[in-house]
Length: 143
Ligand SMILES: [Zn+2]
Picture 1 (tube, rainbow, N blue to C red):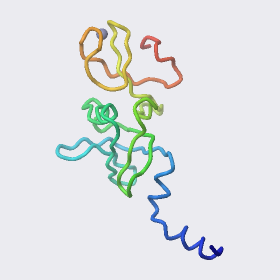
Picture 2: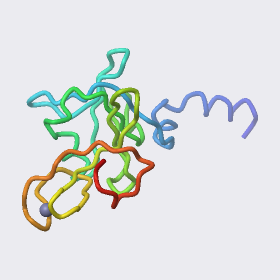
Picture 3: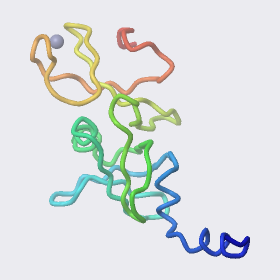
Picture 4: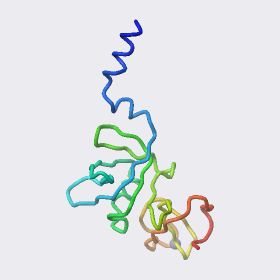
């Protein structure tokens, strides 16, 4: 292929094919409107649908995070579609007081941490939302 042909092919690729390869952060207000997919409304007002594995979707639908200043790591699958990284990559954050905090769930009784909302796997009580400094160890008690 000539240099010119290569340049042309690169230019003509839809933007999202290239974007899909890039791991990026998507930040904005977490949208949880009824009847729509969870999404993030960016600072410039763009609505982006956010999907992911079931544990990730569980976090996105957690009403305690509604309208939070939210950040997901992942990649675009379309101009207004974003797929968050799998839950084990710990790709979900909420911003609070200028800090980027990891979204986690904590059972005080059993000292068990989880990454998606639900009942504690041990005592079966609902777990508490615990936004957490990513630098801390998983097993530390809440401070
Ligand atoms: Zn428990």
